[in-house]
Amino acid sequence: MVRRLLGRLHARLGASPKVLRALGKLSNQCEMLRGRQLAGHSTDFDREQWFLERFPGPISTVVDVGANVGDWTAMVAEIRKADDPTFLLYEPVSANVTALEKRFQGNPRVRVIASALGDVSGEASIHISSWNDKLCSFAAPPEGGAHSEVVRVARLDEELDARGIRSIDYLKIDAEGYDLHVLCGAEEAIRSRRVKALQFEYLGGAWKKVRSTIAEALNLLERRCGWRCWLLADRQLSVYDYAMHGETVVSMCFVAVPSEEAERLRPFRAGTDLEST
Image 1 (cartoon, rainbow, N blue to C red):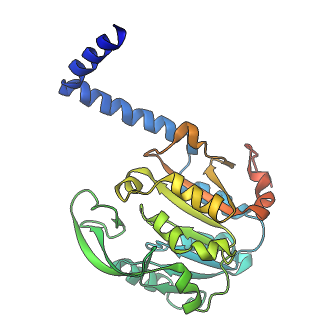
Image 2 (image 1 turned 120 degrees about the horizontal axis):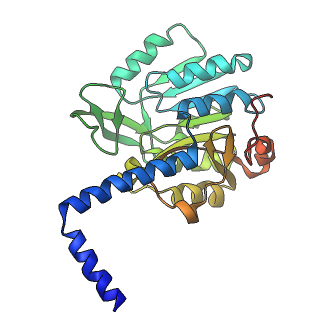
C-alpha cells in the first residue's frame, strides 16, 4: 500500500515542471554543500600552492599538462625556486601556446610543446570558447559559443622517450575533463616510477561527458600501478570515500605518490595543519 501511494506521489510530482525545477535547484545546492565538505573553502589554486610549498623532497623536473597560459607553472617556479626546476609545458590551443612562448621567452628552464596529451596519439578537435581562449575542452563546447581547433594529441609514455626525459618529479594534469585519458596514456611511466608524484583535476560534469569516472582513476593508480591517492582539501590530504560520495559533479584536486613513498606525506594527512612548518 505504501509503495503504491509513493508511486502515485512520484508520478504526480514528476509531471510538474515547477517541482522538477525546484528539485534541480535543490540538487545543485546539495552538490555545492558536498563540495565544501570535501575540498573546503579555499580555491584549488590556493590549495595547490599550499601543498607544493611544503612538498617533501626536490622538484627538479615538472610536466604541466594543460598549461593554459602558464599561471600554475609560474607559481611553482617561484615557490620552488631553490630546486631550480625545469618545466615541460603541454598546451594544445594555438592562442595559449603563443601566450606561453611570450611569457617564458628567454627562460631556458621552460619548454613549450604545442600538443595535448591523452591515451591515443593522433589528432582531435578541441572546443574553445568564442570569448576566452583560456576556456577549452575536448569534453564539450564551453557556454556562450565556441569554435573548434584540430590539435595534436600524444601519449606521455611515448613523449618521455621521444624527448629524452628520464623521469618526472611532479606531473600536473588539468585537462578540463580529459584527465583520465592523460593518466591512461601515462600508465607505464606511472607504474615504472618514472613519474614520482602527480596531481589531477576532477571536474565531475566534464568527466561525465567523456564517460570518465573517479572509480576508474583510483583503480588505475591504486590497483594497477600500486600508488596511493588522496583528495587535496584545505591544509590536509584526505582519503576519498567512494562508497559515500561516488561520482559527483564537484570540482576536486587529487594528489598521488607511489605506495612506498606514502609515508613522506603522512604529515599532510588526518587534518594535520602544516602552516607553522
